[in-house]
Length: 106
Image 1: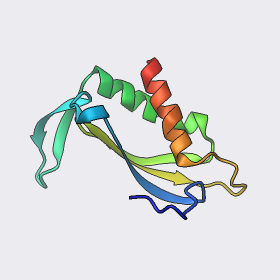
Image 2: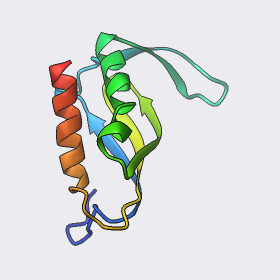
Image 3: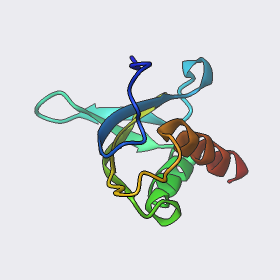
């Protein structure tokens, strides 16, 4: 859900989900569950590429940090924090466009 009036380039923490096209399970396989029922995912080659690129986001954006993330077989959840006193960053959808481009090039 997105709020049309909200400026997502403003400072704050954002919970985001990025889904694989057609929800194909390309990023990994569930291989078990912990005591609370959370799945363990063994990453595929694509999942490893996604993980590598998530860890590079902070190099591309000095005022953006990925606080937590989890890679599931067909989607990725991230908590991204924007700390930008000048508000000069592009909107988060621009971050994701670059993130998707980095993954496609890998």
